[in-house]
Image (cartoon, rainbow, N blue to C red; front, top):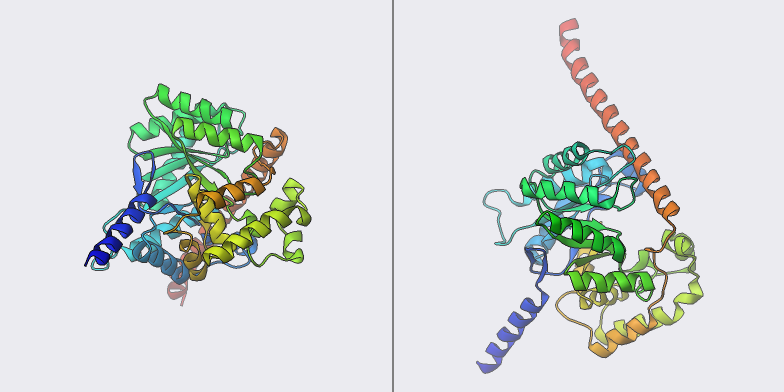
Length: 382
């Protein structure tokens, strides 16, 4: 019986150790699910090489929430032109049908506002937020500013978010892709309105960990109690088991940072050794590394296999000496130090993409009305 209770105590301690917070939102597991590829439009089909089915998304959602206690799902108005938000609402509705509840903890929805070149007013922020809430079917638990790059100052958008939080449309305010200075500015503005910045969603992995900009941002977030939501933990596949020269040549992040395959040799070798030691995949080592640095990894998931692989990074932790070994081998290819014009060019590209999604939505609406008209007119004509 003593052995039994020791095992129960150990399990309870592990569960408590894994709990994490974003602002006042408590998470049982330090893992976020990315739904960028959950859009439904023809444009998503081209960009993602095929759209996911509703059944696949529902199966992923139920597996993660009911079996593995994963709560945080991340989306954005720019993902699928809002159809990713709608898909998340729909699968949640199916999973939470009366008589089918299998959990006693809330699911947390995070979305993002994109300050495109067409948005210059408080009303544009609040209208975008309300539309996201409508698509999600609820208030927004965490609302991120998708980028700090805009002719209007960062403080303007933070003040808008604080107003929305006071109105009850947002529970926690987040920022994305912000460096140390921008994190400080955002937090200072939020405090003026009696609010706080809860999280900074940023690329955080072993490819960029030793860059001066990321180190400064990481320490600033720790100082100001801003949780890092870490995307790109496996470096778009550069830190996974199945990397080949052919795959490497197609990875956008490698092209953006000027990274060469040879530069990965020592880092990948260190990750592989630890994967063998712990009986885990390289991806699971990288995700657990982020958790050990008090970040919440954001993992894009397109299949049940990916979902089950992602949760394999939970329930254990790298030993301190192994963590330090990985830190020593980490590279300095940061993305926070990109020239402002490059980041602005990216915002222009995203703004254009959003316009394409809006055009697609209008075309679909016109087609729907035309089909309705035809179905009404034909019987009367006959």
